[in-house]
Amino acid sequence: MAAAAISLTSTRIMRAESLERQSRLTIALGEYSFNSDYRAGHYNPLNLAAETRKKFGLGAIDYVSSFWADKAKNAVFLHQLKSNAHDNGIVNHIILVDLPGPQLGDLDASRRKAAVEAHRPWLEIARFLGCSGIRVNLSGFDSNGFRTPGNKQAVLASSVEGYGRLLEYGAQDNLDVLVQNHMGYSCDPDWLVRVMQQVNNKHAGIEADPGHFQEIFLVGRPGETSKIVKGASFDLYSGWKKLMPYSKALNAKTHAFNTHGDETTMDYQKLLAITHKSSYTGYIGIEWEPEGPGRRMSPAEGIEATKALLRRYGASTS
Image (cartoon, rainbow, N blue to C red):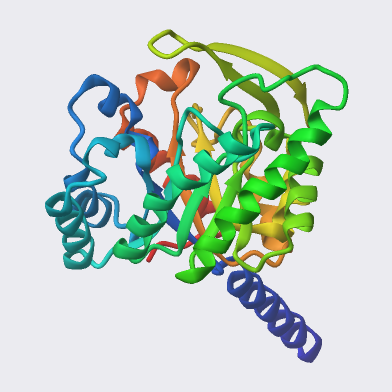
C-alpha cells in the first residue's frame, strides 16, 4: 500500500509538472484567420477585439498589416483599435507586416534603406498599440537573383545588414522585430538561424510557422498577378526544432481537420511536443488558412477547431 501511495504521488507530481510546463504556451488569435472574409470585402478590423474575447474566449491578437494598411495613417481608426482592445481586455501582441517592394534583404543598398524606412511607421503603430513588436520578411517578394551562384549567401549578408538596421530603430522603443520563416530563403531554417546568430541582437527573434518550410518567391510586376517560384523544401519537424531557441512568437497554421479534430496536413502533437521541450514561453497565434476539405469550414469553425486542437496538447487561453 505504501509503495502504491508513493507511485500514485509520483504520478501526480509528474502530471503537475507536465501541466505546469505546458501552461507556458498561451493561445492568441491571428487576424489572418479572417483572410477569406477580408478578400470578400466584409471584414471589419474594429470588430476583432470583441470577437476575440466574447466569441472565441481568447485574450491576445496577432494583427496583419495588409488588412488595414489603408487606415495605418488614420489616427481615429488607430485610437479606436486600441480602445477596443483595452475595453475587451485584449493584449495587442504583434503586427505581421508584409510590404511588397524593396526588401530588407535586397542586394541593392539603396533599396534596403528604402525597405527599412517603409517599416518604421509600423514600429510606431506597434508602439502606440502596445504591441511587443512586429514581424517582417527579409526577402521573397521578388526572385532577387534566385538560383544564381552565391545568391543565397549574398542575400544572407544583405538581410543581416538591412534587418540589423531596422532592429536598431526597434530597440529605441524596446520593440522586437521578428522574422517569420515565410518568404524566400527564410523558409530554410538553417539560413534563418544564421541570420539570428549574425545580427546578435536581443530584440531579434523568429516567429515560427509550421506551414512554411519550402522556399517561395513571389515574382510579378505591379498590378499583375504574382508568379510563385519554389525552391528547396525542408523537414517540418527538424526545422521547427531548430527555430525554437530563437522563437519569440509561434503561428498555429491549420488547413483542414478530420472528424476526430486532428489537423490532417501536419502532426500537431509532435510539433507541440517539440515546443514544450524547448525554452519557449509565450503566445501561439491561431492562423486558419483552409485548404482541401477544410474549405467547408467557416473562419469561426476553423478557429474553434484550431483552439480545441491546441488546448488538447497543452496550450491555454487567457
